[in-house]
Amino acid sequence: MAPHGDDVLVTGVGALTPLGATASESWDGLLAGRSGVRDLGPDWPEELPVRIAGTVEADLTEAIGRAQARKLDRGEQLAVLAARQAWQDAGVPRVEPERLAVVVGTGIGGVLSTLGQDDLYEGSGMRRLSPFAVPMLMPNGPAAWVSMELGARAGARACVSACASGAESIALGLDLIRLGRADVVVAGGTEAALHPFMIGAFAQMKALSVRDGDPAAVSRPFDAARSGFVMAEGATLLVLERAEFARARGARVYGAVAGAAVHSSAHHITSSDAEGQVQAMRTALADAGVEARDLGHVHAHATSTPSGDIAEAEALAKVVGEGAAVTATKSMTGHMLGASGAFGAMSTLLSLHHGVVPAVRNLDEQDPEVRLDVVRGENRTGSWDAALSNSFGFGGHNVSLVLKRAS
Image (cartoon, rainbow, N blue to C red; front, top):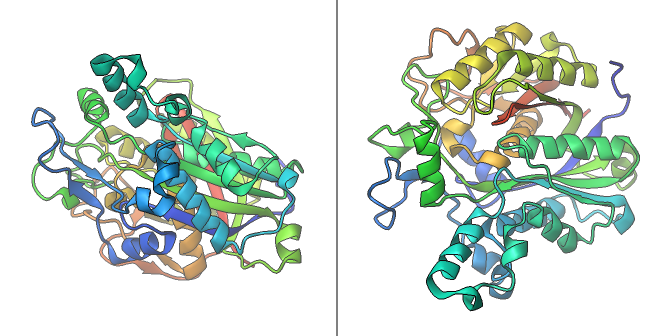
C-alpha cells in the first residue's frame, strides 16, 4: 500500500473523563498516575458483584444548560461538551458548513435513556414517556447533536463498533479529509452506560473484575494479577483539519493522524484475535509510511482482561517487539468503551507533543507472557516522531491509528 503524502492535522482536543472535566485535566491526571475509578455508593444494588466504575464527576446539567439537558441522553451530553471544548481549543475554525463534518462513535448508544424510559413505560404507561426518548436512545444521536452544535453539513456519521468506535471514528474522519469531502472533521467517541443492567450483563460474561479492596487498584493492565476490566464513562473528540487549511489559518497544531486501519477478525464475537490485530497494526503503519522501528511508543488497548492483554501483547511482540515503549491508560481511567479509542488517540498525540509517556498504574508484577517494554514506575520522557494507538472491540473490530508529532 502506498502511503498518503499529506497528513491530517489535529488542532483541537476536548475530553470529559474519570480523570477530569477537560482534556488538560485528564492529561494531568495521567501524568500524575491518578485513578478515576470509584465506589458507586450505597444506591447501587447489593446483588451486583461489581460496584465500582470510572465516573465523570462534572455536573453535566449545569454545564450544558437544564433546558437542553432534558433532551439529551448522558452520552449525548458528554459528546456535546467535549465538542465545545475541542472547537474552542482549535480556535473556532472559520470553515464553510458544507466543508465541516462530524463523526462521533459509541459502543452502546443511549442505553441509560432506553432503560429509564422502559421503566417509566412499565410503571406508568405510555403517556409518561419523554417526547425526546427516540433521539435520546439513537446511537447516531451524539453525532447529530454535535453537528447541530457546530453547524456541520458535510455529514454527521456514527461509528458503532463496540470498544473500537472512537478510534474508528477518527479513522473515518481521516478518510473524509483525504477524499476531499471535508476540510475539518470533529471526530471521536462517547459512552455513558453505567447502569446496574450493564454492569450485571458484563459481569455475567466474566469480563469485569470482581476484585475487592481499593477501587483504584482494580484496573491493572499487563499485571500478573489482573482479573478483568473496570467499566467507565466519558467522551473525547478531536478537531482534524486538512493540512493546507490549518496552515492557511495559522492554527496551533498538536500533531497529525498519519495513518489508520480498520479491520475485522471474523473470528469470535467476544474473544481477542492476535492475528487480526497484527494485520491492523501493519496496515496502519503502511498507510502512514512509517516503519515499526520508527515508533517511539504504543498506546495499548489493554483492558486488563486475562486473555485480551495476552493476545495484544503477542500481536505487539510480532509488530514492534521490545523496540517501543508501551503504555495502557485504562489502568487509570477504566474502560470508557466507545470513547476509549478516541481517548487513547488523544493521549498518544499529547505524549508526542509533550515528550512524555504516562506510566501504567497498578503494574506491580508484569505478566511474564507480556514480553514488551511496558512503562512502569515513572513516566518515560523523550522525543519521538511517531506512535501507535490500538483499539479493539467485541465482534472482532480491530482499529490501529498512527500519530505523528507536529513538524
